[in-house]
Image 1 (tube, rainbow, N blue to C red):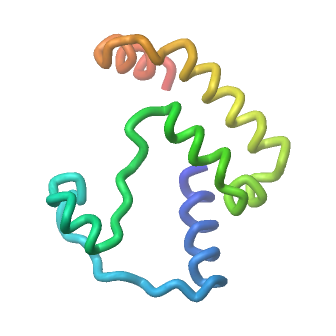
Image 2: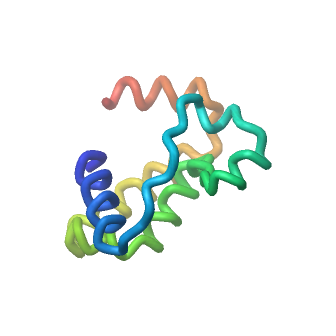
Image 3: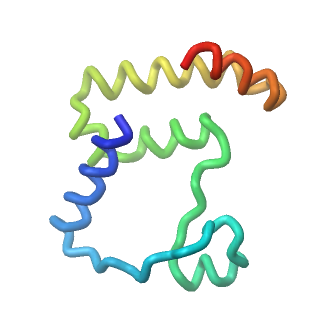
Length: 100
């Protein structure tokens, strides 16, 4: 899924003629917000729920996955989010490590 996402995003950028920006050699999360804004670096989602919302709004990736796979993937992740959203991080990590 991750490889597919990266390839699809790259092809979308090529198809839309987007400019490749300067590489970032440090963790963007450690940059001051003003520098991230100036470099047009968007923050990653801070939760699975936020990531699901982004995916729901990303027609390019959903179309690349196909309707059935996209719907199934989102449904599974939504159920996972609902089950774990109120857990503390240690408990969440323990469950995820045992599954994956």
